[in-house]
Image (tube, rainbow, N blue to C red; front, top):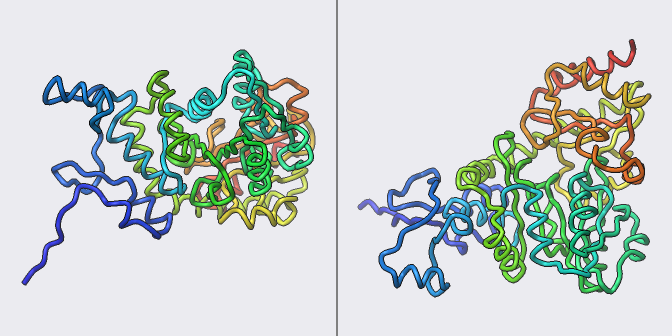
Length: 407
């Protein structure tokens, strides 16, 4: 007698308890239509219809669950949200139009006039501008401190501090924060601890395990992995994410269904890609460290990195981003960048294609000279987001850059 497993339209959360992040990347947030498709459907619709006026009223009033309008309810977006929340170990995720929209939505939902933020100095340049210029207009003050200086963190916290915000590893110098210590500091001062986990993804690092309240991603980076579209996501408790969702519903920095489908599918290969990025980046960092024209390499996987031991405890790999300085200044750094032929000169990161940029004039170009100096963004600094090309081919392209410095 042949037994046939009952078909189902989704995998219950209980069936995924205790499985690895590799399996969650493929199976969590999997919803099927009545057609029981093997892949995932896209719902490219602006709105949804109802069986009656009464049902429409019940949906809008919150008395009946279901889709209403794709600005804040869409099955494809929900599937992505469920998958990344499961991978991070959070209760709920809220997807946004970009990584910066994820940070903005978090701040607008959870902060108010008179509140104070303590932010690590080594963050993406636009994150710095958002806090320092735009949130300041609404009476939200920000103090920037060195990521690894715990005394500075303690000194910066006030009775108005509501958010402790970090990237770890940092962009672009790959500094690593002690998340357990910062989580305790935030908790003791009734502040929320927010971690931008863009560089590591949940494959390599799960900040909730170290006390984070909220995890943020620019999905544009590794979650997609192929440079196809923009998106962001915020992960946290149901209570906190309900506030973020409320802002999203009203203000509308929404992820499109198509982009959500891209990210949802991208997550399926994320574990495999992240391990390949890590392997290439570590070998390339070690090789660059031996080159006479290279002054210093910044990568947590190197034993020379000051937080190497901490990174080894907190992370399951060291990521695909590294930075290095060459002897000289901006002209030498630009000469190195321009001499490469295979890698892409672009400020994006996290792609399977290796990218190279000069942070001082791109990602951190809007910072003042003083802020650049405090953040360690020097004229001779170059950032690499190492892809999955053959290692020897990457070395050969780096040799072109090194040769340009010899002329």
